[in-house]
Image (cartoon, rainbow, N blue to C red):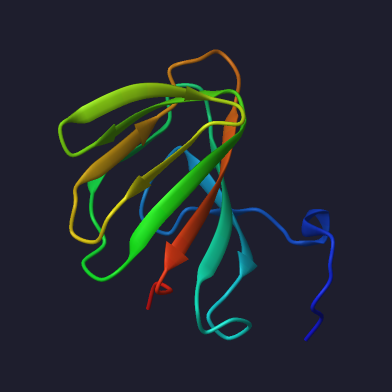
Length: 113
């Protein structure tokens, strides 16, 4: 298993739970038992609807575009270079309100099952 790699070599996949989203799994629990790292792409109007992760914190770092994030009762437009997180069990939602695809890194700690 390589420790150093180019994410461009990893194929995008449809998000397993949400339409309008694609995911590129960058680091899986098999590679690193401490976290899961994925790149997420939302098409214009695409969203990850309200959901939570019972045992994991999700941290998201916006790479491109802008996403409207809601975590609990807080909502904010996050642009490239901005960050947010949702603690375990806290409902959160991410939507792309813009005209271009948006991308973010999602880090789950501990890793998703």
